[in-house]
Each structure stands twice: as structure tokens, then as C-alpha cells.
Length: 193
Image 1 (tube, rainbow, N blue to C red):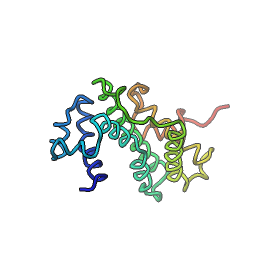
Image 2: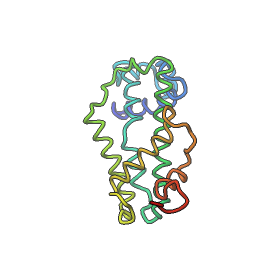
Image 3: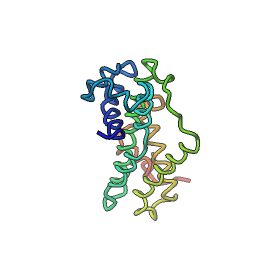
Image 4: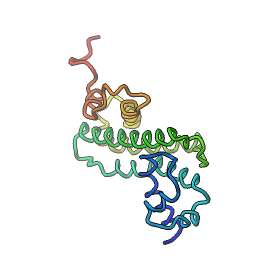
């Protein structure tokens, strides 16, 4: 198996272990989960820490979410599309926060030796995600009181705030309710002023 493919395979085998037990997993356990000899890990990663850092980087990569957003059926109504956006975003937040909680609970989080994203890289990821959400909104942008990009930013922020375990009080998490509030507000009548 080519080295890059082997790296991807090891990352895929390691992520479920990390979510379950954090960074206290052994390379023997990783090898067993991947169906390879333990030494195989060190042919493509310098250390266990490098592998764990790559697992975190892989989990935070926005590309899979962007791909999921791109296949949302834009012929469906705006509300239906936004419910799917919120559902996908909330699942991503829960997945990443669960992974990081497991890593930090076992003391592995701060010791990871992966290159943290610069502010510019973080902004680029954010911009790509907002643009992908805006594409989902665009067919109905003329119905909104703000631009598709502004609406996308608001949808993303609400999905994040209603699902992040360190921010949300879990009172409002249902994607349909989140979208209903975003599109129609919190009052049962129109504006009174």
C-alpha cells in the first residue's frame, strides 16, 4: 500500500479509538484496529503523537462537510435545505468536540505535536464553509432580508451555538426549531413597532 494510503488507513482506524478512549491508546491497539503490524505505523508516522495530531487535523478538515453541503438538493424548499445544513453542522460540532474532550480528558490534547492552524488558515476554512452554506441558500436569496453570505454566517453561528457542549444549554437543539426561529423569529405575530 502506498504511504499516503497507509497514512489515511491508519488515521481512519485510529479516530474511533480516540473518540472512545482519548490519547491513552497504545500503538499496539492502533495496529490491531488497522489490521497491521505495529511497526507499520512507524514507517509512515514518526511517532504516535504525529499520528494523533494528524487524526485531529483530519477530523477538523472542512472538506467532508463542504462535500455534504454541496449535495443538498437545491430544488427542496429553503426551510428543508437549512434544516439539513443545521443537522450536518451540529453533527460536525458534536463529533469534533467529542474527540477533543476525549483527548483532553486523557491528557493528550495539549501534548499533540501537530502544527496549529494559523489565523489565516482558520479564516480560509471559515470562508469556505460559509460559501458552501451560502450556495445552499442562494436559490432563495431574494426572499431574505440579508445577503446569502450573511444568512450563511448566521445559520452557521446558530448551529454551532446550539450544539457545542461548552456553549449550548441544550434547550434549543432541534434543527427544525433552529431554522424556524432563524426564518420566522421568536414571535407568533409580525413586528409591532
